[in-house]
Image (cartoon, rainbow, N blue to C red; front, side, top):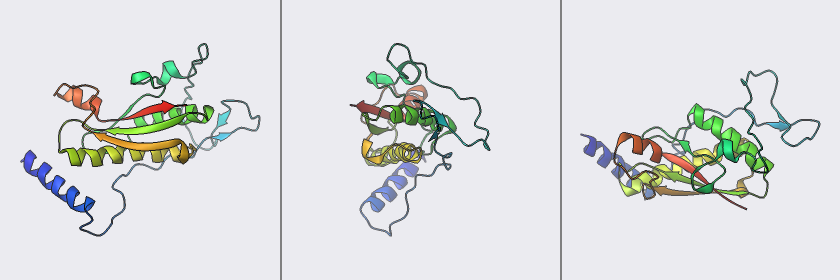
Length: 189
């Protein structure tokens, strides 16, 4: 049954990628982002405020320890200062946790205008290569669109999908699959 569903999904995806049907809007859906932060009147670095009429909960600011601003708080694998975000199985929808992480990433990127980001979409090993490449692209684009909505310039970001080709954990179990369903942020100056 599972193989039949995967095959049907793969066939439908292949048909849509080949342009055999009418173009539809992107399948990536996520809750609308909160309003982007704005600089306060003082113009101080990190002086970001949000509208007072919304309860945003406690602000968690990254700690600056000796010139490595945010790296301990946001540190991702492979030397990236930005942590990966994770997705549910067969989804490109941003979870509330992923949105919160992306808000921290947006603050970091806004404080580091020289930084460029490649948003990489990754999947677990289940499904076809073609299906996972498309899903990885949707995941990377969802992350990039959210960062755009928070004020990060589009010309500072690019998107690439690796599908299931670059797993962070090569094991074939539920824990490994959860680690591999991610968007990774490769930062360059």
